[in-house]
Length: 403
Image (cartoon, rainbow, N blue to C red; front, side, top):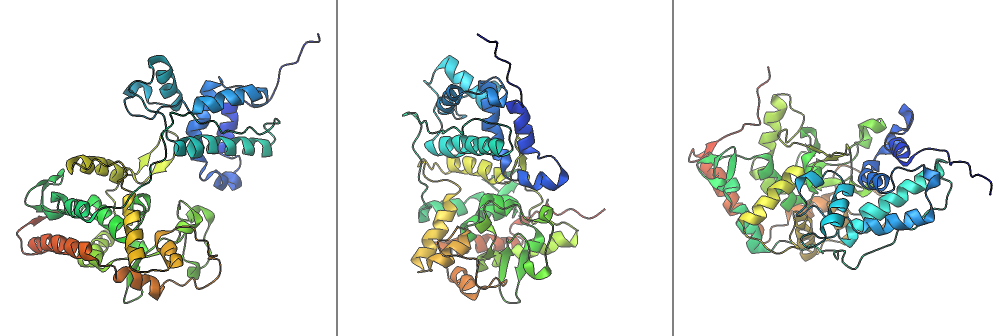
């Protein structure tokens, strides 16, 4: 038989580098959102031993499809084996699954199979891979079912708001221990904004002082990519949004104003600080992506243990479900509900008024004061009143004087 010439072309790792950093300054905006694929593509590189793209056979894709269902989640994986998905996979292959759990169906389908499919489709479009696009569809019967999230119960919400973080804590480093200090930290505001606006944790972390605006009567967070009334802006200056529908106006509940959110904004602007929560640290993932929700997620894991909340369907994201329940109970129309929460709506939103203020939207939030919010107001304003009378010592370590 005639000798087969070796396949030439780019390796999988070289293709990934191009995918994450498109060549040319004018193409780099295309890389937005691609960092989410880095982890699973690196898994493919390690699992298939970084082959030339065109050398990958249909059988290789099938092996990879099955292997993606055997990646365990991080729980009970030793720290030395958490550095990559492939290390976690190898650990499970060597030590078995006795104390390990597979990823959920949602993770496998969306984060693993979905991102791999997008990467291969891109490679075909860029003429880097000339084979047939594989179908990633394998699911192991031991992969975890999707866990529907539930809203907070009233009792759980009051237990949260009654913690020393909100009523008087030991010091700036021990905010969950009772004491004589009153600190309205980024975690303090984080929980309250999540509860009373339904915003995403990552959206709260990115807030700037300039995002808190008013029409002279009402206050709201301007989460639009940019204000179209001021003209166009460069793509590089657009706000980093999860989805297109995430850009929106978020009315601020009056309780947040009463608790002093405007005071924080004014004090920070007076010292030249642009961010509303400068002490909120962004987490940089190993793949280079930024995760703004990290401080709140870390706090919630501790708070859930502190409050002895055992039900698995209660997560930090449950604050959005809580707001959804309140809006439903108030009879708010579906389109208005979608606009407040930043959901994609079945009703086309391309046409219609795009002005800064929507009176109906603001009224929907301002009228939201069910019994549990009234109780929250009593607890939170009582603590603020003690601080105003000197019964609690006010600390503001995030306010730093200009040089």
